[in-house]
Structures are given as C-alpha cells and as structure tokens.
Image 1 (cartoon, rainbow, N blue to C red):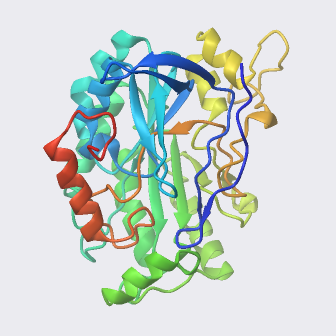
Image 2: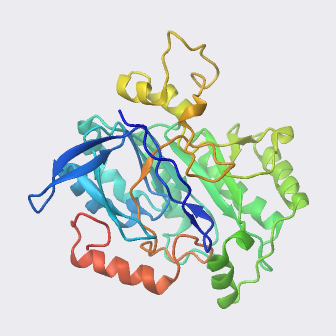
Image 3: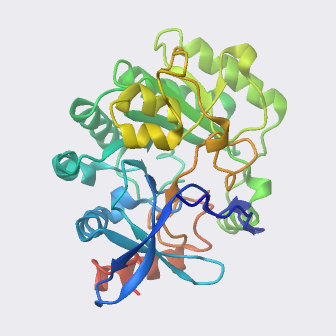
Length: 358
C-alpha cells in the first residue's frame, strides 16, 4: 500500500489547503470511454468540503458510485484524477440541504459502505446570507428524518460559520443557536461551530463588501462570550460542543477541538469493519478503549488541512466554484456567476465522470 505524497497547495485567495494525503492504493480501472486508466482508491471519501454534493449532485454521485469511479479536477492546474470507489468503506457527507440523500440511503446500505453527515444548519434567513437554502423549518425536518433513518451519532449539527455583522450581534447568534438547539435536543450528540475568519479569505471579504454586508471580525472576547453562552444553553441539551479548525482553545468552558473526519466516531459506530479499522490504525487488542471508543492514531491526521484541523485523511471529491447555494460568506466559490455557470454545465451532462460535466 502506497503512502501517498504530502505537500501543501495553498490558494492565497481562500487560504484553503487542497492536497490529498493518505495510504490509498493506485489501481487500474476502465473508464466510460473504454480506456485503461490509473485511479486512486481511497478508503474514506469526503463529499464534500468544496461543494454541496448531497443538495445538488446526489444523483450524479450515486450514479458514479454505481459506475465505480469519478473524476476530480485539480483547481490549480486542471489535472484530472480518477477516484475509484472499489475500496471505499466510509463516506462523510457535508451539506446545508441533505434531503436528496433520503432516497439513496437504502442503496448505500446495500453497498455495505458506511456514512455519516455533517449537516450545517444555520439561521441567517432574515439577513439573507444563505439565499438558496430551504426554509429553516424544512431543514430541521430533514435533520430529524435523517436521524430517524440513521441515528443521532451519525447526523452532526454544525452552526458554521458564526458571522458578526451590523445586523447580527453576539446575542443574536446565541438566540439563533438556541432556537435550533431546542428543536434538535435528542436528535444529535454534537454541535460544531466556527467563527467566520473573513480577513483570512480575501475573496470572501471582497464579496461581502461588494454586497454591502458590514461584517465585524471576531475578537478573543467575542469568542469567549459566545463560548460561555453556548455552554449555558447546552445545560439543557447535553451535546458535545466543539470548534472546527479554530486556533483558540475553549476547553475551560467545556468546548473541544473537533475532528470532522473523525476516527473516534468511526470506532464508535463502525468498529466491526476490519478494513476501515485497519486504515485508521485501530486494533482493539492493542488499544485501551476510552470514552469515544478508542485512541486515535496521530499519523492519520490529514496534513493537507489547516493547522488546527483535527481531521484524519480522506479524499474530497468535490470541486470549487460549483455550489449554487450562493452563501454570502462562501469561501468555495470565487463568484456566484461562475458557480451558477458550472452548475448549468453539469445539468447539461448530469452523469459525466466529473461534477462539472467536462
């Protein structure tokens, strides 16, 4: 099994790291054109940090899963890479609207591939920061339906990112979180949040200013105020509360650093899957079980993510500039117009090897 190549690829506009590390074998596959090509065969798929595959590309994804592979296009050099699903044991879905997944969950069960969902459920309706997401109550209903079909460990609530503007104060954010949290009590085990780091994302800063959204950067005092407020609310929820990719330590309030691609959750939910456990380095005969099911293996950390990200290695199959949610704070689209054009191109060729239909 190859160890992969480790390198940083940094987009200075987005401050996002793209490279793919891991221990994924290269195998030969036959593509749709009948050609013999080499493909990577990751054990863990991330679908996706780069675009909302469940909301807009679920039909494409499950068609490609049936085909056995898809194509990922590197955004920096446009090099195409083949991704085989022949050895995939887990898919981590990321979405603001995963309702289209509901009709595919039985099919996924039949493949024997595990899954869990990072469900971003914010409330910026009044401020119009997420123009193309469904209404809040519809999304809460989707959340509950997914939990009923999966379980509360496997649908994770994200209020991500928290945004401060001239129309959204710290107390407004806490009220928004409270309204959602009260409805999700008993439906999830974890709340993950982050603070919008707009000054680090030049395109986000420019887009907000272009659209006359008067954002305010988070100061340390703001973060600690929100941490205290969240943990006060959490007394009635009893969630694990975690930050995503944040430098600041909030452990004194009971808030931990999150791992979105989470080996400890995998051990808790899928420990019977030997191939997945071998990949993450978990061997129960050698590891003392702890609260979440086992100790993580530090060598599995995804070195292609931000410094304070705790995720283990996975392969993200999404492509930037393809998400039509049109969130005002989005780091994954350089412009709404480009994202819309790419989505329209996809719709013209909806089952092509790559999301963008080319």
